[in-house]
Image (cartoon, rainbow, N blue to C red):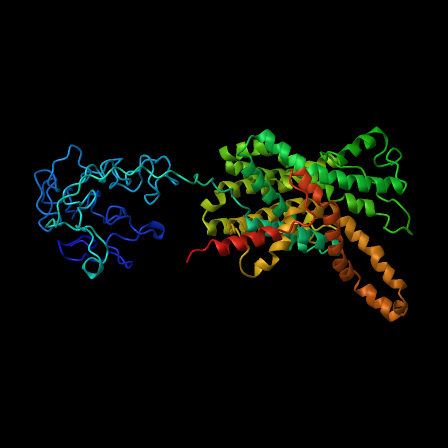
Length: 583
């Protein structure tokens, strides 16, 4: 006897699974609707051909439509296991509209979720009562498929029938009731839920936050080994490429326009402050020997739309000023990233088209270009050469973002991806060892090493990408800072160098304090100077976020926020999760 099939009248069915139900646990924990007909199951004999099926289906050694002798439905008439011939037997071979057939029914209007067999009855619901009160038509006299006769109960409660399975009636205790009027379908009171918008990947958000912190620390301390420990720029370009590929499901022109719109207003605020400070300190772009003449004036447009390198003075101000004379170089330094970012944004529709037709050549081509323009084989002079080199060095990282978005990295076995990435990274270190720059192992000065190391590093990071919706475990305590840094990434990146310089005059004020006049106190402050800069730059970044960070919201057509750390949403999520739980 097959588990889950009744052995005969009066015999309780054997449980087919630990839940105690002979028909298996219904999906999502929903109990079967009215016995064996509401829960299709691989072992369910109502509408699924089974080698041991005794309910009107073929089985070895039995003619079609004749049940086994232990059938709980008694002795049938010819061709019908229920005693009456029917023009279209719903208990034979499952049809597309057969409510006892396969799980996936045709889409039912008015039923949320379509194929859910446990939804509310709709206009075409095969589980809704048919006219006449029965499931398939007028009720029979024994009440098995229609309204039960008065006083006749086809469900035996308690120990006699612990599962509430309809059983064959052997006697009628009262005359059959007249057909009950058909119950109209219940009106739908709720519209189907709209598809949820994909949320942010908190793993990618965490990587972006770590990259921003690493950039600030690198520019503060100048430690060359940080470029090896965590190649921030390669990571940031890869994350931007992944988001760009996801956005390009929409028309490309609108996506590019949206990316440019989000970038430019924060840049305009920064440029207005920096260029004004340059002119106030006596810089004249027309007389500058490095950027003189008409080209220097035209170059100022790169502070508005950074397709090229903006001009700036190498030395401005005086030695007695609040800022050192090279402050303009430091302030304008990060603008190369915005130039490279715009180049990638404009090239993305074509790059993505090429990637989806020839993924590997498109992925590896920037590395080949770096081997040409980043090693001196071909030299492109001026800022044009710098722009092409930046595009080549980080181009493979940007395309890796496409691969991550399209799932290409997940289709590569992890051991193969990690092994290949490790070989590329080893090549990068080997090349760097023979081409060390003025700052030693600073990969920013060695283009081919930077490209190879960043490529392999990003492959490993994205191969292990866990796609978190919430930061797990102890990382959750950093959730607000991660949210804040992602919402103000452009502001932090643009202003951090200038704010690092601003810590110097603030710390210098300490030398004038009365208790700092001894040589010992002065020496102690000198030794801890970088640490004081590190401690002060973060409050200054926070002040700048409050002062101008809201421009990022305006650029993104959002409501301006002073401190968008996600605290309100986090509280709402906790409230929703606590109130929405059903025990």
